[in-house]
Image 1: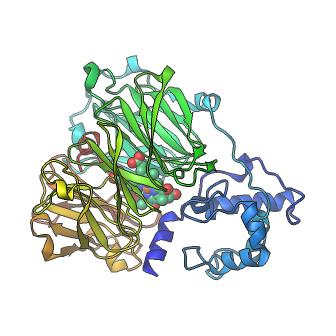
Image 2 (image 1 turned 120 degrees about the horizontal axis):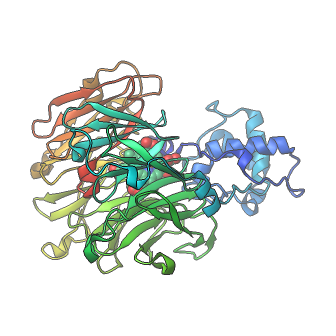
Image 3 (image 1 turned 90 degrees about the vertical axis):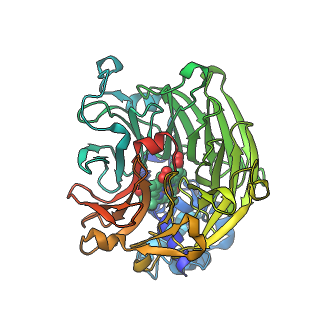
Length: 549
Ligand code: DHE
């Protein structure tokens, strides 16, 4: 039960696509439905169903719901499924009271019609949305404030459409910047000067950290829905690609966009529609998940969720783009580098596998079986006393924390194999973290249904892994009153001697950031401010730009 509940909480975010932006067809072959009913059902579908079943209903974490399938299942079956849910993870929208019988009737009929199609979004639309607020020649030549940029944290304020820039040294909020609907992640340019954020609505904001205070210098919208942004980090060829490009992947339309790294000018848009890795069937909506920048070649590594393919996109000549396609497994989600930054390890979460890409030799190094919905974030790298260098992931579906060997030279027998499995507090874990200077491994569990577990964090001693974990009551330490107070996303400071946690409460409630001393595991600071609304992801400039985790 716990696992299903936690998985649902994770998947449940509504799609920001609006029904009125879609092309809708009320066909004569489906059951009777007015255009108003179809439009209303479309909005309900985007808010409740599209996250799992896909905008075009081709299926992802949820089953496909195309008319060849729904018409065979019939009205009674569909109504019962929406009302009561299923053990496989479908929520009980009816009995939970979230949808009325009239809504369910409308949704059922909607599923028997062809799906509406959201608009395409190409160069014309992107250029219209593109704004440069401060041209390159008007930007400062040097840092205009006293702060150490490399110890800034960019913090997602999920429900207020903002990010906070917090100075890691003083723990002061340096600036709150309006970005747009639910920023998902922050990434930094290779030099660390520019911060890029991407919202669920596919809007990118580019912030110049040299300015006092850090200020937005450009923006663009690359689609209707998105999750990933990254910048070129290849230092070879005289460093000519440092800060040169940015890339964003979108969920809708299914495509990625390469932009100028100084201005966000859109340069190249590439569709990801195509055949799935296993059954080799056409998929109209392969969403772009995690993107990382290779350190070995002028390349971006791009996860395509629904087709289960990983693309190596070489940006050295955009007019003759070379894209190498590596077969992995469905549905690719998040991932990060091993400590050597040669191997990219990424979760194929519905196949319960971790794919390993060798970015130097440009090939699939391994596909490793792990247990029930791995969710690493960027993962954690540490030295296992028995097995040498390992990369770690936790899971949504159970309490397992899996160590994978990453050293094919000195620890060959464990390389790309499960070297060790620890048991944490429970399922519903999203992120793990360690640091080259630390002896701790931190494991959150924000989506666990037990509040004792979701409001605390487990910490393991890397040199004494059999001892089990210590539980730190992070939400209690924050002392912020009522609310869900999920403890999420450990992130180290630049020095690697502090770990920061978000205590993520409701929009109307107080949230906080709790800073723990990594050595003593004692509370070091609580950052509380009415402006810190629903903090989730936090990204330290130095660690994120250098891929230290
Ligand atoms: Fe995330 C990373 C997608 C829900 C917080 N999330 C990612 C990435 C993807 C993704 C593809 C990898 C980006 C990269 O590295 O380039 N996330 C999705 C979803 O599709 C999903 C399941 C549902 C949705 O509708 O968005 C989802 N994610 C969430 C949340 O509910 C979280 C917990 C809170 C929030 O802010 O929305 C959340 N996701 C994060 C964070 C990262 C992330 C903090 C970056 C982790 C890191 O350390 O790099």
